[in-house]
Amino acid sequence: MLSTDQDHTSLHVLERMLHEGFALGRTEVVDELCSPDIVEHQLGLAGQGAEAIAKVKKGMTEVHAAFPDLRFTIGDWAERDDIVWVRAEGTGTNTGPFFGPPTGRTVHFTVIDVARIRDGRIVEHWGVPDRFAIMLQLGRIDLPRQP
Image 1: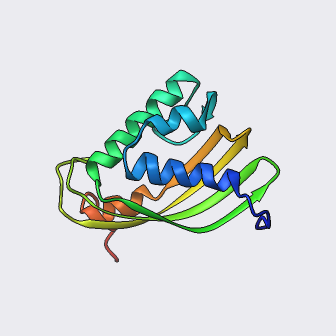
Image 2: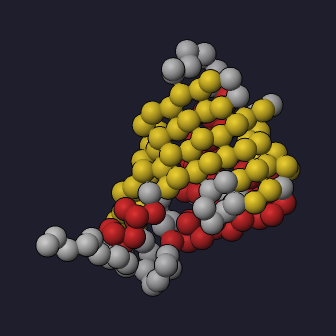
């Protein structure tokens, strides 16, 4: 069910993580928007507390370096109690290393984020960026051939 509140604080937290953090590479947003005890479940970033925070910041830095023009658009979102779900679409040009040398190719992919937010901070997060779509568009993997 979509929230009807005028103040979409939880949605705003995830928007800032995407826009300021991953798109712009501003890792300080993690300290502001994530609990020091965050539990991170995303593949490659999983951990808890300081370990998770360090991994998220490193991930932001790497993604921004690989796609410095990356932009996100929020497609759909829903909120219930202290959990918010977001479907975002990302588009960026690969001008830095990302699982290999830069390709110069533009990618378009979907990200699903689910976060438990308390007092304006993420305390638990599950992120599912469509890495398969990114890798296909960069030419890092091929689709299986049809028989």
